[in-house]
Structure formats: structure tokens, C-alpha cells
Image (cartoon, rainbow, N blue to C red):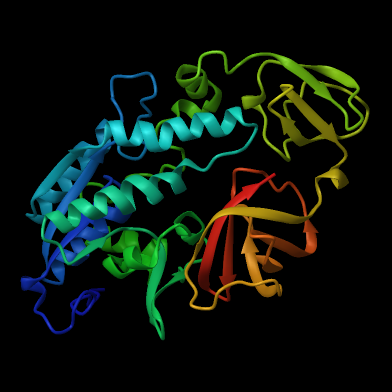
Length: 370
């Protein structure tokens, strides 16, 4: 089931004369990506990032870029006969991803550190390093597609919608997109696994990790408390009128839309509607109180040639990584980007991303504000 990627970079040059840097995390996807590039004849250089001190309590065995993963990436590179480098990005990762993660939780919002990592460390710092290494492209194992459009490179959802990672890549800029390639975007996971078997990769049977790489056992609170001592200050759980229903041991243990683990009994299902960081209050209410008709969006990264204006533009948007895009209108009002849903949406959480689509194409995206 060989796949021809010999024209993926520059059809006017022989692959052997074209250097590419492959970001290798030690997982199946990036390993297959490196193997496909080598098979196509490119001058492949594998790069793995060391993102945090593996001796710290935040180590997560089996997660992205943990110690075992660096070892696995090296084994794959040796199998393929390509050079492999491990780059120490610990200080950048801590400053740009982990610190932001902690601060976002302390603001009563719900962060997406994988987006920040792609936005800063991987598609900014690592991309610069790839250029310094003489690469003509950086290739990753993300399940998205980069297509040529009338006005330059476009970002599109993966063919396999169950693996699509476009939500996490909305912050990719046009110039970055010109330099990036995503050979897995046209495959499904079974094809990727089959390629791993075909190449006899040592990670062919390695399970996927869905966890955040620096969060041990899914304990966000533990990480935030370590980064920000005092983050677990107690407070009240209150209803929408401000009546105290109970107490909690830190707002970082809650997120908008949460129902379980509230520790209160009122005879009716209650959900986290809002988190007030100033008063350290968790506001709860009935399910219908979660419905949101309109949101503001900050730090918009817009990839379309047509600029936004005061007239709402019909689009599809995703406000959570696990849901399908829904109908909405996006527009600018008093200098602020606004998104008005065709139908009110439940559990829209500040700090998450709002990604904008035209069919499968990513038009852009930004961060949901209060």
C-alpha cells in the first residue's frame, strides 16, 4: 500500500535534493510520517522536543514527548536510517504553555494547552529551527490537510473526521502553512497503522495517548497547584441568585458544563454555569442556563482573503473539540469579533477555542472570551 509523496514539497526538484524536518513525538503518527518521507526519497531529518524535566512530578509515562517517547523516536529514526536530534525546549515550553495553562485556570477559564503548544513552541520555534537546518518544509503527523487555494495555502479538515485535528491548529498562520506539510490528512487511522506494520516500525502497536503531556493521571489541579501555590483556595458553590449551596476546594477543579463531582444535593440536576475567579465562586444552575446565544472571540487568526465586517458572515463553528461544527454568523462590532449561533449552544467555556469553517476549510479561529 505504498503511497507516492514525491511531489509533496516541490515538484520541480528531486526529493533527494529536498531536505525536510519531521517532528517526531515517538508515536505512531509521526513515525509513519517520517517513514513515508524517507520512502519518497526526501533528505529527512527527525527532530524530537524535550519539553519538560522528566524527573519532575509532572512526568506522564506514555504521553507526548515524555522520556519513553524520546527513546521511541530515536529507535524509529535508527530503523529508517535518518538523523535524529533531540532539542531542549523546556524553558520555552514552561513559559509559553505550562505557565499559560495555570494562569488560564486561575482566571476561571478552561485552557487548551495543545493549541498554545502548536501556536508557539512547535509552529513558531521549531519551524524556525527547521529553516535553520536547511529544510524546505516541516512535516508533521497531524490529521489535517493543506490544499492550494486561489489565494495561497489553505487548511482543511482531515478526510477521517474522527481523527481530524484542525480544531487544535486554528492558530497556524498563512506563512507557517506555506512551510508545513501533513501527509496523513488524507488517511484514516487504520491506514496509518498498516503503514507502520509495513515499515516494521518498533512503535507499530504503541497505543495512543489522549492526555495532556505534562498532566499526570489527568490531575490538572495538581499541576496548577505546583505551578501556582495557593491555587486550591476554597470558596463557595452558589446558585444563580448568589445563595450558598456548598463549599469547594478550588475553582481549578471545575469547568463550565460540569455536572458530576459538585458535592451538593438539591433534588435537581445542576451544572456549572460560570466560574467567578474574583470571588472564588462556582455558580451552578439548571441545564437551560448553560445555553449561550453569542460569544466574543479574541486573538483571531484569520486565514481567508475576505476580511470580516459588521455584516454577519454565515459560517460553521466549533466551540469544543469533541463536537461537530454548528451554524453561526461571525462579524465585527466596535472592533470586537463576535459569533452569533444559529441556535443557542450549551456549555460554551471561556478559554476554549472557537474555530470557524467554510465546509471543510478552516477560515480561522480565536479564543472564547467571557
